[in-house]
Length: 177
Image 1 (cartoon, helix red, strand yellow):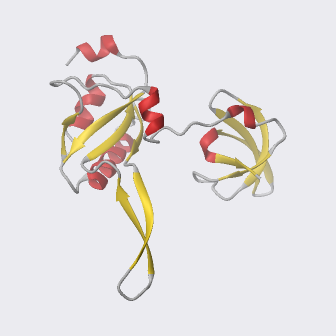
Image 2 (cartoon, rainbow, N blue to C red):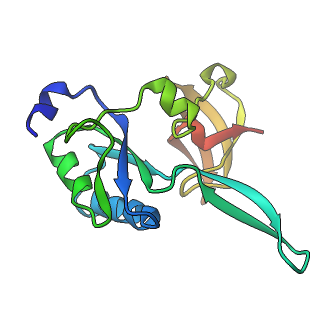
C-alpha cells in the first residue's frame, strides 16, 4: 500500500463500502478515530448523503423521513496515505474502498459536487462588512460581521460574553442576513 504516498494529491473524497445498515456506525467510528488519534490533518469530513421527504402515516400525521441516497456507502474526505487507508479500512463494518482491487479511487470534483458531498459556495457573494449568521459549528445561532474573505473561509467578528472575537469559519458555515 505504500504507493499511496507517491500518488497523494491532497484531500479528496473517497467512497468506503460498508455492510448495509452500518453506515451511521461507520461514520461515528471514523469520527471517533479522528478525534482519539488526532488525525484531523488526514481525515477532514465523513458524510452519508441523505434525502428527506415528508410521508403521511396511517393516522394522517406527517412524518419527516430520511433515506440514504447511496445505501452501504460512506463518503470520506481524506488525504490518502498508508495511515489514513489503514484507519478507515479497519473500522468495523467497512468492507473496502471503491476502486479497482485494493486501490481506492477519489471522486472527481464534479462527482463530489453532483452528489452534494462537497457544497459549492460562491465566495463572490461575501463582502467585508456583511452581516452573517453562523449556521454550523459551536457558534451556530450567533451573528457577526465579516472582516476577511479568503478562498474558502471567512473571518467573522462575533460578540460573545461581551467581547468581540474574530473567528475563522468555513464559508459553508455562514449565511448572509
